[in-house]
Amino acid sequence: MTSCRPEYKKEMSTLQGSLVALVTPMKAEPPHELDVEALKRLVEWHIGEGTDAIVATGTTGESPTLTCREWETVVSICVGVAAGRVAVIAGTGTNCTATSVEKTKRAQELGADAALVVTPYYNKPTQAALVEHYRTIAAAVPDFPIITYNVPGRTACDLLPETIAKIAAEAQNVIGNKEASGNFERFKAQRKLLGPAFRIFSGEDCQSCEAMLAGACDGVISVTSNIVPRQMHYMCQLALRGDREKAKQIDGQLMGLHKNLFCEPNPTASKWLLAELGRIPPGIRLPLLPLSACYHDTVRNALKEAQNAQVPVERVCVLRKEQPDLGALRHVPVSDENNA
Image (tube, rainbow, N blue to C red):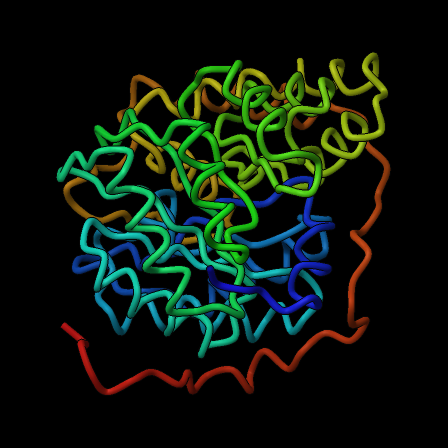
């Protein structure tokens, strides 16, 4: 059994609210190189708007199309800009256990606060194999928090609540799960099996408010928060406080975005809207294409409705008040290996 240092468990035990599944800014012209300056500005904007944590290099961050060097650059930039003010969680999961181990080790070295490890895709492992997969990764980084990630619609692999409980029992640094199965009952089952200390995050924006109100999850790893982070943060705070009327009112105004950001495969619509808002260039990499023109008006209208949500101007509580020197983050440390 692996062990997690008490300070790590204490830090992560309070993680809740709106965690942005961050897009990766890319330049408009092929080959759509990383736009590092846009990434820095984007992370700083999220912190100012109240986003509770940054989840980088996940599905929304187009991780399958990032080279190893690019992956390291994105994680390093997010860690450097956040500067301890909010947690940075790095997506490190692959369909190879050994590769997932190495990426998770590297995320810890780069200063991330935790790793989000998706189930192996395409291989279709058994539940017993999933226990061994996560146990092996956790054992390699015993002082580093790990959040499992279940998204069977993308992976053809379903991580069951009972399996998560077995994993958490064997690996104490597995401290949470992102549930994106679309099955609301999964939240309740995980809470019952794993208790209140285990962090449960919705991977479905449209289910997150109700799950938080039910006490069945602690927040959302959110696509919608890419576009309206302040509104998402406020909705989560209301739901976690049990203010059903206000939380549902705000969530109702966000529902159009929750749904229409998936009118084409994520992050197509999110990146298009952010480019429309002038926050990032419009670059997106194949095998995805820019948002089809037939959806432009629908997505714009959903944004207008979300922006009408009345929320106070507030900031998340931060560990450090000072803003880092973004110019000093130009040179990002990356390893010399595996840069393909």
